[in-house]
View (cartoon, protein in one colour):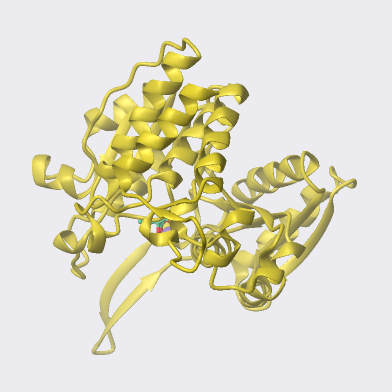
Length: 357
Ligand code: IPM
Ligand code: MN
């Protein structure tokens, strides 16, 4: 299923789908897809952020590729208004996609694109593992009048089994990497964080060969910009992971480079760039399609178990950057030989590169 969504979603997904077609042709794969609306564009068309029909199609698909949802047109603070974001949350919950992988890598060629100093970020390779179906995102919400004041409640909730399964995945993934897990919470204040720390410590008993450390989220926010190389796998709750992964994106230079995979126990996954709908640049043909294209590579890896195709896409992206092609978000006029390109041109270059391998 392909769900382009809102803002720059349709522009970048068009390129990702062209790359998908190219990869299918190159490796002689029979990949069929359908394109459907989601988010604000679905509200406009059907009155719902996601229809039951689209949800059903996603459930029976092998993988879902999503662009982005949301925009000023649908923003409202009223408690009972329909929000494009609800579509995303519903998909994650109903598909049971509890594990959100957000890898943060630094491309040597882009060291100067980061707001951080080169010596701090060189060689960073972090796997962010964000829990995706619990927390304040799905806890009970309420708005009422209490003692004459308008009062709003959100519930930060975690169940032991939700923590256990994400912790287990964190340790499993660490085993294939540098063998280090940092679990991030706020156990000095928050009760669900205390349970988080307890369960993670228990699960660690089964993974004694992996090094585990616990870190408070405020400290983690600082450590990420102070010394990001200390992290290998960073596992955290839904809300903390949302915030920290945007921060971590700036290590790699641009959020326009950050792919993600949302997974569950079997191979069904949803793949989306983490940058969102970027309404300020939508429709101008300048958005960076690389995060969407790299999400496609994650789809080949995790849902289709086709490492060859995944690597081919990643290699094409590397070559693109090495040759100096830059979309607006990563363009630096002081960099010698860098060439500013638009969204479609970037797609063309990736496709041509895939042809040459
Ligand atoms: C993300 C986004 C979403 C989230 C929004 C759009 C609901 O920020 O995927 O990181 O908060 O999870
Ligand atoms: Mn976010």
